[in-house]
Amino acid sequence: MFYLLRPFRFLAKAVTSENAPRQLAWGFALGVLIGLVPKGNLIAVALMMILGATRVNLGAGMLAAFIFSWVGMLTDPLTRRIGLAILEIESLRPFY
Image 1 (tube, rainbow, N blue to C red):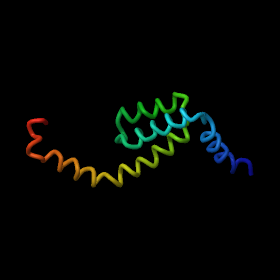
Image 2 (cartoon, rainbow, N blue to C red):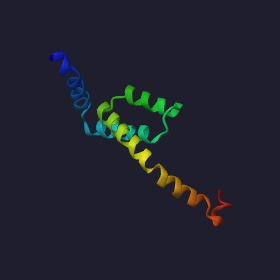
Image 3 (cartoon, helix red, strand yellow):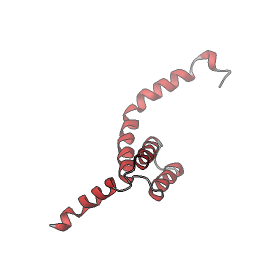
């Protein structure tokens, strides 16, 4: 029975450890960055290493990364259209 509950105990420990407000905020901020950066490149790997190596809340970081990966994927068509519309503004061409 204890072996079945062991993963839940580890999850609870990950969420409750490093629970100072500053550590929670840093964990969440790093998770947002990890979630919004495209996966499979060196930046994403470096951000994951920073999340794991620093004293931030790992549970908040991983939860934010999971949520914002989905948010980024779902809003991708809209943000693509907005970016394309901005890039096609004729008066901004010299600025680019």
